[in-house]
Length: 148
Image: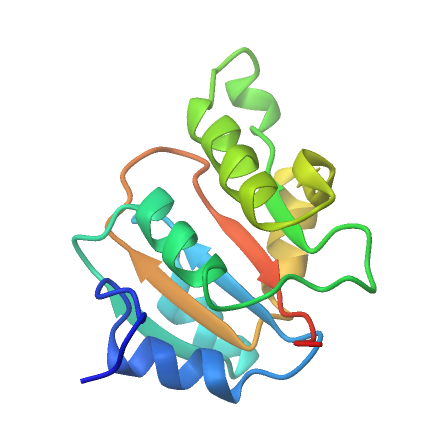
């Protein structure tokens, strides 16, 4: 047993977070994202977090992993596709609030990218964790910072 480790984090996810270095990125993917095929193509570590909602997982990770202070955009979310314009994505406001709780830059630490630009950023992730999150456009990339 370990103290102060959020129980929602699996041993495999903890290992992946520990192995990530400064500047490495992790994609927390919703249940619709093609995580396995992207991970295989990009040689990223692929993990499952089935049954876990994204806000809870994001909160747990950010209690243990600092965001990168050497970039203006250490957290990245996906904007709606043009075919879905007008669709409301309330989970993104939840993400901004969680990030703001853990990063002094507040909501400014979260950048929003056009869908395909976001997918290009996802291709550079060291880790892809597929969650059970069913909200659409609920993907988020986190860039790991330095512990000072």
